[in-house]
Image (cartoon, rainbow, N blue to C red; front, side):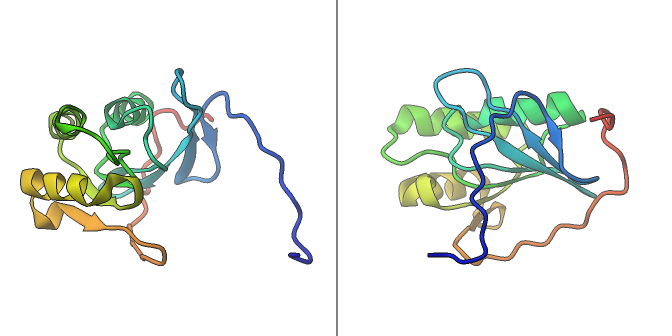
Length: 150
């Protein structure tokens, strides 16, 4: 079907993986889901790039702080608020606010109700839609992480 492409097998990630000077893969957080995320080191601080954050955005943000010494300044990805009630949405809002209210680029599993709640809490400029083809630019950091020995 796709000539010239090689199939890549699933690779389980145990710890942090450094892909380049600025890009890291974070291991799954223990629990029900085995979801990894990525972290891009920028001049403004770490950017968390995630799928659906099934294990909770607060845990993911704390994982970034444990590794790089500060909370993410931006989040790119879903927040798994689809079908969520007021309690889960409220907890997600509190998790984000208590960790510095990063700029959020989200869509997919955040759904319109979650997007509305995020925008009411953090403002229109702090929450951006994320669609296929969206281009986001970040200035890369010249500083090394505190754990640059990976």
